[in-house]
Image (cartoon, rainbow, N blue to C red; front, side):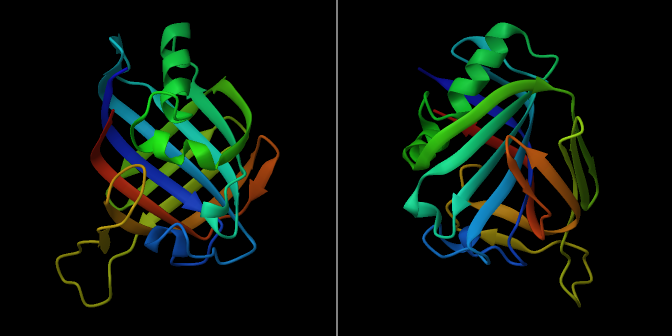
Length: 200
């Protein structure tokens, strides 16, 4: 079992700015739950010999206030251009069946609500990142440039535990309308990262 994927990533969640879960999974969320949508734009890579270049995938989950308490509810969308082999292998990776960073989180998942094909659009325009999945998911986050930073470089967290990587850009939701797999919310915060890689 081996896989290696490279691409970009963007997420929005239900917490206020900043999400305590990004500091540590055992910190409580802003509210009595953590609902998040994670979008992966895979530019190149393979899973057990299957080319996955150009595929997009979006994961939505609902977790307790303290994420390490487990019993997450999870749903997955794979872009409708994926063939059956790509679809099956992407689901195996992102459900944690093939190890890697997603495998480390698999014991926290209590229920998989479903996996479906859908039209997925992911856009990156400078500091602004957008995700649209059919009529179920529509969000936009904007990377946060701290007051007084003349270079225009957004703020980043380094050294965090996150399935995508330990160095992510902090962003704020401009809009979030999420209603998928029985999970709905309007998000407040977000993360983004271009040029990331995941493997097992």
